[in-house]
Every structure is written in C-alpha cells, then in structure tokens.
Length: 151
Image (cartoon, rainbow, N blue to C red; front, side):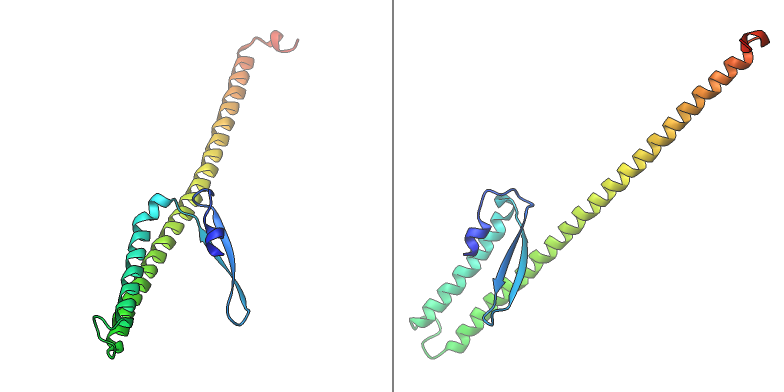
C-alpha cells in the first residue's frame, strides 16, 4: 500500500524510494521527497477538487444527467479537460520542485565554497601573524648588543 509507505512522522526533506511494478512485472524505483503538510495543503486541495469534479462528471453521465445517456463524447471531453488540467498542473509542480531542488543544491555548493574560502583566509591570516612574530623576534635580536647575542 503506497499510502502506508508515504504517510508517517518522517521529517520534511527526507527522501522516500518506492518500488512499483507495472502490469508486465517490470519494476521501477520512484523517489519522493517529503514535504511539510502545511507547504502542500493548497496544492493538495486543488488536486482533490479536480478529482471531485471528474468524479461528479462521470457519475452524472452514468446516471444520464448533464450530457444525456447518449452523449458520452461530450462527457469524455469534459473528463479529458479535467485530466489535462491535472496533468498540466502536475507538470508545473514538478518544474517548481526541480527549481527548488536546484536552488538548494546551489546554496549547498556556495556554502561549501564559502567554507573553503574562509579556511584559506584563516590560513593566510595565521601565516601572516606567524611571519609578524618572527620578524619581531629578529628585530629584537638585531637590537641587542653583540655580547648579549653570543651567550
């Protein structure tokens, strides 16, 4: 049951991989990333509304309403329109998810690069401080009289 696999207390951002099998028995892994329920509530509601509209159209037509018993082509067109709307909407959501995924990847890359640059700057500053200490010691040693240096 896919619902059992997807519903749980796991943290948003966690990847879930579900293996599905088609009618020919071929298996395919599908990866999902969990989202916080609050972030997808409106999207879920739109999907549920489309599903309800499609279900009502099918039930009305089966009962002979709206398009009449013999006018199933009109009904199929309406259902096809709802299916197309859901498909386009799903593609938009997928595109949005890919953009967000790329932004997160880029932010991670910039974070790693920034940390590397910070480490490099720290090393340069440490080397400069060490060089300054050595130069101070050499200056003090040069200022001492000759007899103080030979002891």
